[in-house]
Length: 356
Ligand code: PEP
Ligand code: MN
Image 1 (cartoon, helix red, strand yellow):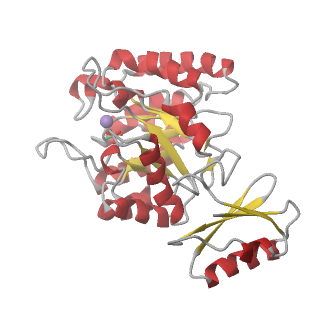
Image 2 (cartoon, rainbow, N blue to C red; image 1 turned 45 degrees about the horizontal axis):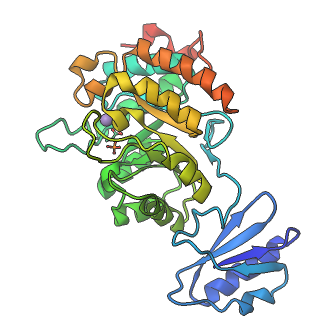
Image 3 (cartoon, rainbow, N blue to C red; image 1 turned 45 degrees about the vertical axis):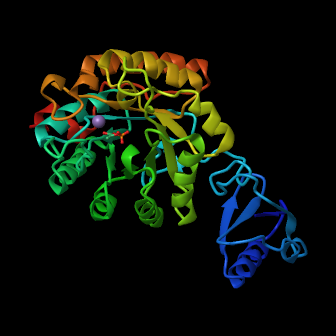
């Protein structure tokens, strides 16, 4: 249920509604919109008596939220959510596309720095790289763990890039929360409800990847877990789903972008690297993703993909990434968006001489 406040309702009237909700043993989620504040109610097992709220001062109306997901729905918050980062003007869900690029895994300081340099030259604001890797085989490279996170922290310092990396479980979450700017929840964990709840208790933005056979409703319910714990800074990520098609690793479901945007106020980005699994398909699908109206992209890039320890076949060479960005910039303009501009000058601390 949603208690919609009048446009001119005071903070005190909103607080009174929250107190009333809590006095009934329920949870209040105040959602500030451009026009009005609304207070979502969760934690109820049955129907909540709406008349208790309708008569309170400052309340405009009480509406039932028809969808199973509440806090992520547009019914509760009509305006788009813009995900922001402390100490940075980079966003997801604003006019500028949020582009995340970097290797699948952090393999060494040299490897991460080399990729970061070419990503930074393209004006990209976010660097990806897994330190904890969910691999199908226990014998495949599992990531450098904490050492990888420390390398990522150095990349942030050197290049001014915001760090996006995966937390695989509650143990790695503690470390990722400490060292990263954005916590990635991988496809395989989209329905790891205890992890989602813990991620919801952090105050770092979250990149939530769609499960490989998740419906849109299941995807949004996973995001609801995070919001229900108080963390509203969630970016959805389409990364392909399992189908009978075997010409690509997964089938990139671009139609989920407008569907998610209709149902939810959360930004949604696209991962054409895992979505296709093949280097030559990454740029065409990036173009399509921007054209369909996504809020950003996450792209795997490697300077020596033939020798990458994970996902080399889908990783772009730096020159291919530069070409992708050039194409994305022109398509972004057609759909009323902008993309980061390439920079001739790297941040002072990021001169190649300091790159080992
Ligand atoms: C990744 O981003 O490297 C990854 C493992 O992605 P996904 O969870 O989508 O498979
Ligand atoms: Mn990968």
